Image (cartoon, rainbow, N blue to C red; front, side, top):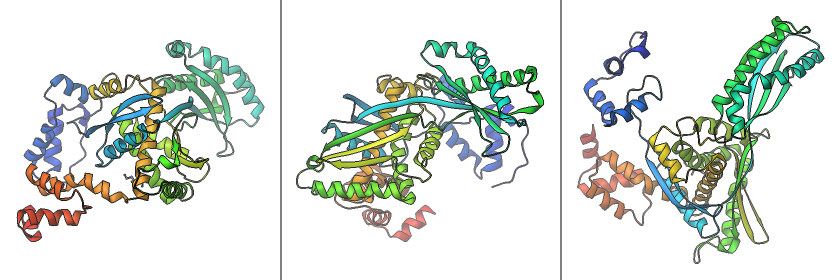
Length: 450
Ligand code: MEV
C-alpha cells in the first residue's frame, strides 16, 4: 500500500475524482480496482443516485445475499422471512426451525412494553439538591409546552413524551445530573424525534437557569443530549412449546434425552459467559438478518441486546427453556427498538420489498416476528449442537463458498455437492475431492492459484 498525504476537502470532490484519488493511492492495479467498483454500480441511474445520497463519500454498492425463509408461523399468521446475511447456514437453519415449529403450533409472541429513553446529561455545580429539585419542578411543564410543536405529530399518532425526570448521578461522578425523558415513538424507531426533543430541552434548561432566581446560568453546563440505545423497557417475548414426546421425529433420538440435552445446553449459556456470547451471537444471526432486510439499525439492536443480556451484572443467555408436566417450553425475551416508518424504510426498494413481504407490519408486529426469528435460529443451532454437531450443516452450506474459491465450474460444483450428500465436508476434504475430480495434485492447484 502507498502512504498518501492527508487529503483536504475530499467530501466536496465529485464521485469520479474521489474514485480516481482512491485507486491511484491505494491499489496496485487501478484498472482492476475501478472495474470492481463499477461492476457493483446500478444500471438504473436514479436508483444509484439514491444509494449514493444515503451516505457521504459513496463510491459503489456493497451487496449482501437476500434469502427468504417460508412457513414461519407467528401468532397464527404465516410469514415468509426476508433475511440479508452473508453467513452460509443461517437461512437454512431458519427454514428448518420454521418447518419444525409450523407443525407444532408456531411461535407465540407478545410485546411487553415499547418505551424509549433519552437524556440531557448535564453538570450542576450547586450543592443544595433541593434548589435543583424545585427548579426542575418549575421547569418540567415548560419542557412539555416548549416542545409542543415538535411532539404534535407524534401525539396525533398516539405517542410523545411519557415522562420527564430529574436524575441525580452524583453517585457516579460529582455534579453529574440528567433530565431523563421516556417516550412512546409508535411505529418509528424514534432516534430523530427523541434527539430533537432533547436538544430543545437543553436550550430550555439553559434559558430557564439563566432567568431563574435560585440558579445561575454558570452553574449548569449541558454535556450532551442523546437518546439511549439501551431500551430495557422496549421488550418482546416469544415462545414455542410442544409435548416432549413430539420433540423428535420417530426413529430419531429419544425425545426425553433430546429435551434434557437441550436444557443443559441452554443452562450452559445461562451460567457461562464464554458460551453465552456464542449462544446469543447465534440468536443475533436471525435477528440481524431481518433487522437489516427491514432497514433497521442493527448496531443499536446489537448493543442493546448484549447490554440487556448482562443486566444482572453477568452476561447470560437471552433464551430460556423449561420442561414441566411433559411440556417443552422455549422462549426469548429481548429488547427490540424497531421502526416501520422513517429512516430508509420508505426509500430503499429492497427494504420496501421486505416490509411488503411481511404484510407491512407495524413496529410491534415486527418486534414479534424478529424476536421469534431469533428464537428459531437459536433452536436450530442448539438442535444441531446437541445432536449431529454444527459442522455437518454449516460445512454443507459453506461447500459452495469453498468450491467458488477454487474456481469450480457449475458442473464440477453439482458433482461435488452430490459427492458430499452423505459425508461431512471439511475444507481439507473438499480440496482433496476437487483435486481428485480434476486429476491434479494439491501442488498443481497451489501453483495454478499463485
Ligand atoms: C454460528 O454463526 C452460530 C452458532 O455458533 C451459535 C451457537 O453456538 O449457538 C452456531
